[in-house]
Amino acid sequence: MIDKLSKYGPSIFSTMTGLALQHGALNLAQGFPDFPTDPKLITCVDLAMKDGYNQYSRPMGAVNLHKQIETLVFNNYGREVNGDEELTVYPGASFAIYLAMQALISAGDEVIIFEPAYECYAPAIEIVGGKVIPLQLESPNFDIDWHEVRKAFSSKTKMIVINNPHNPTAKVWSKEDLDALEELVSGTNCFILSDEVYEFINYTPTGHISIHSRPEMIERSIVVSSFGKSLHVTGWRIGYCIAPQNVTDLMRKVNQFSVFCTNHSIQMGVASYLENHFDPQILNSDYKAKRDFVKAGLKDSNWEVLDCEGTYFMMLDYSSISDLPSIEFTRKLVFEKGIATIPCSPFYSNGYDPKIARICFAKKEETLQKAIDILCKI
Ligand code: GLN
Image (cartoon, rainbow, N blue to C red):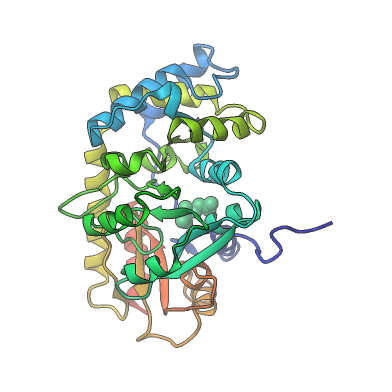
């Protein structure tokens, strides 16, 4: 038997959550909210179940949800999406990313990713025989060196994966970065996979610049979004993807023969919630308040809080506390200090190990206060 993913072990997110549970530590590791789900959302799904939406939906996604997503994308980015041709609802954004690789990448194709990179990109590329070309972003600014990107780019580059706002660095792509990307790929056959699952969690004055708002890029882009992130329900596994029709057709084919469709009652409940209750601005300001709370709480601590422009993650530099590699250091934090975080090195394929622990601040104020109290004593 061949293990096609032999170089990968268990996910760092589940590993750290497992350790937190085992040792009764405060879990700021894996990115998920610990506050209750909006009761209105639960009611919407409950009603959808009672209304009988308990069988398969269309593989492309329920009509009602399609309508709501089209409205959401138009209202936020001014893009008119033709849902029948371009939009598909999937069981989670990670699955959409996996399908995009299944559909578009063949053996020998090169895919550029920026490291630190979210853990699902490289395995999804490698399992179909694609070659990952990692470009390293360095602490503390994690700026993209466009000279390096141009050097890495060739006729073999089938795709560039971007993640904006970015997990784990909490950086946001500037207009200049998007301009540089557009210039690089224009006139080529290269696809852009834009992971925008944190699109509504952006604290910059400019706000989120989506690929949806860049007409020149739309024709080559697969844009992935997540209700798990935007509605605080990561365990529901529901996301969506907007891509050109020919790409959408291929991805839907793989989807049809794997999961077929996404949970129907959840789709219908989410559709009715989006129509009646969802406000991205509230989402954004709630997370901004949490970010500011943690930042203020750690101001006089030994941790250096790196810039947090988006997402619900924050990078904490511990170089004035310890020289230990980040995996070892974060394990010690669980065992000795009762707090779980995520080390930075697993997001790099080459062992680069800035002295950084990532925390998730999608937590109740009480949890955040406990975390601040622990971190300030270290
Ligand atoms: N996106 C989450 C994070 O970055 C983890 C998701 C998962 O565990 N698969 O922490």
